[in-house]
Length: 242
Image 1 (cartoon, rainbow, N blue to C red):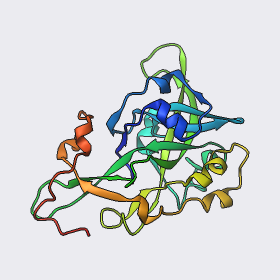
Image 2: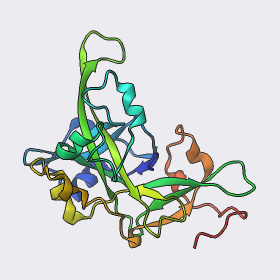
Image 3: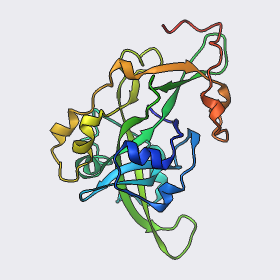
């Protein structure tokens, strides 16, 4: 799964990297977060007509038929194997796909003799961002604050699939990472062939994955600083991963 990630690149750099044509005011104000958690607003690349946009969407997909926003708390990830058929995701998969720019993500593994799992930071060796496959939806309903005015919320989910060989020592699943050659097809509102789209949901090349242990401070979402991605010593009880 993917439940915590790093969003550290400035919005203007993200826009250039993904060849974005328009940047929303909310995206322009997005601040670096080295411990991005579900239910927060995350940078998202999507396409409206022929225009590629950078926006911020609520992380946790809220289908249009949901009674309230809390449904999104259970839909931070969608499985690549079932995304085309699950009622919560199939319409978005066919019509509303996006890319979630991720500078790296965290995963945890148990260490014998220690009460807490050891977190690891996974990132590209070249420092470039991951283009993580996502879906988005638009929900209309009452304000969660109890206001009389209805609200419109755009939300997103991250698609996960089987881990590649490089990731497997940490976890059996990982985010689906799209190569640049797939971005246009994935984002196109005119592409509705779910079988064709499904062929894009494959494990990333091993060369895109490197990782190192980081501080357990990342366990708390209150901690968001850049020090969270700094390498720490491997726990002595840990079995070597490589």
